[in-house]
Length: 368
Image 1 (tube, rainbow, N blue to C red):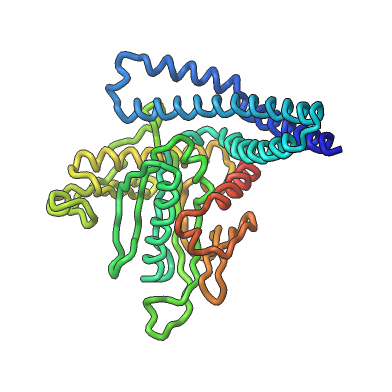
Image 2 (image 1 turned 60 degrees about the vertical axis):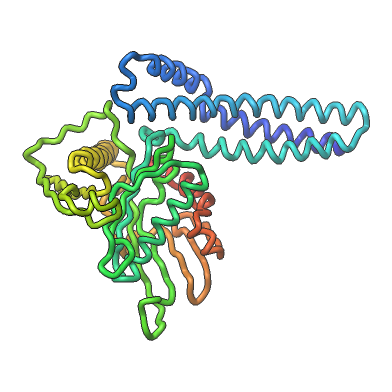
C-alpha cells in the first residue's frame, strides 16, 4: 500500500512537471540558446560591452534553465526506479529516500513554475527601479530609504549585481528619490509587480510626542532599454540642465557640474543622473533611462492592458499595493494578493520572495 501511495504522489509531481515544461517550452529555449551562441561569435561583439555582457548573461540563464529541466527529468526517473526497487526488495528505507527526493523535486518544480510566468515581452530584461518618498514628510523620506535598503538586501541575497544610478537625499535625512539598476536576467519580470505605493505605519522617530504616523513611498519598475529597441527622441523635445552632484561619489563628483537633469517636454518625464564621474556618462545614462520610460509608456498604450506599466505613482492612499505596520501590531500585507506575514523586520531585511512570487501570479492574471 505504501508503494502505491508513493507511486500516486510521484504521478502527480510528474503531471505538474509536464505542465510546467509545456508552459516553458524547452524546445523554444533550445532555439534561443542556439541564436544567442551564434550572436556571441560575432566579431564586433565587444564594441558594445554592456550589450555583450547582457548577451552572455541571457545565454547563461537559458542554459541553466535547460540544465535544470534535464536534471529534474533524471531525478524523477531515479525516484520511479527507487520505488520499484523498494517494492521488489521489500526495503522501506528506499521509500523514505524516495519521499525525500520527491519533496526536493516539488520545490524545484515550483521554482520552475515561477520561471514559466516570465514570458512577457520584456521580462528577461534588467530592471531599473526608482523609489520616491511620498506623503509623510521626514517619515516618508526615511521610509523610502528603508525600501531602498530592502531591495538592495534582496538583490545581495540573490547574488544580483546592482548599480545606484541616482540618489537625491531628503532635507533632513532619508531619501527623496533613488534609482538603481539590477543587472540580472529576468530581474524586470521578477520585480515588475512591486510597482505601486508602499505604506508604512509606525511610531514616528521624528515625533517628539511619540505618535503613530502613516507615510508613503512610490516604487516604479521599468525594463532597461536595449540597442535593438526603437525609441526615437526629438532633441527639440528635451531640456537638459547640469548641476553639482549632491550625492555620494567622491570629491570629483561633488565639486563639478557633472550631474544631469533631462526633461522630456511632451510627457513631463524628468530623469536625474548624478552618480557617474563625468557629465557625459551621466547624460548617456539619463538618456537610456528616459528611453526605457518612453518605451514602457509606448508599449502600454499599444496593449492597453493596465492603467500604467511604469507610469506616475502618486505614493498616497489611492494606489497602494502593500502595507507595512509596526504599531499597534506587526504585519506586512499585500493588498492585491492577501499574502501577509508578521515578520516585518525579516521583510525589510530582504526576505520578500513570497511577496514577489504572489505578485508574479497576480500580474499574470491581470495583464490580459
